[in-house]
Length: 237
Image (cartoon, rainbow, N blue to C red; front, side, top):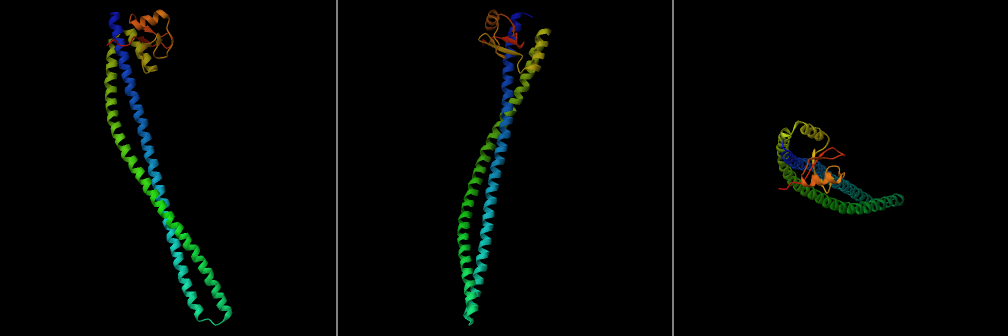
């Protein structure tokens, strides 16, 4: 094969491998981002559920306190009715003490009920905020997931097309060069890399001066003495 033709094939192969690496990177990024978004949504769901549960617990406590208040009020009314008909001084004093204790407990329960009502209101607001944040994240996440799904499908299709084209180009290379390229592709994402200021674009090892010049000017097919990848000039198109 004419050296110039072979070199042009290798330059084209380098470009295709760069495109393949970009498509693969897109797929990896989308996979990780997809997982992150789903985990984030689960966290928002858990936060909302926890906020609702705390609000429910506070409401249950309030209802329990209200029931206790009703029981105390009924007991107070009964004790006060009893006081009216008592003539025995000792019994009278005992009932008055019971009434005073019930009034004190009623005052404590009413104070607790007020605090619980405030807590229920606060918990309800927190639950509403948490559910709003969950719904906002769900909408935002759904839009991003839908967009990424489209991009992922395009990247997968491009990936298959690029792989087919890479295989076609490798099949056009001389057998020895093709075997080296196939072997290198099992070790690295790219078998052919661009020269970068006299250094290998894969491992960044520097070449002897003449090799760097040959690679930069497209005069010869150079192999990196460190990683053994083919190193070609940047496309002149």
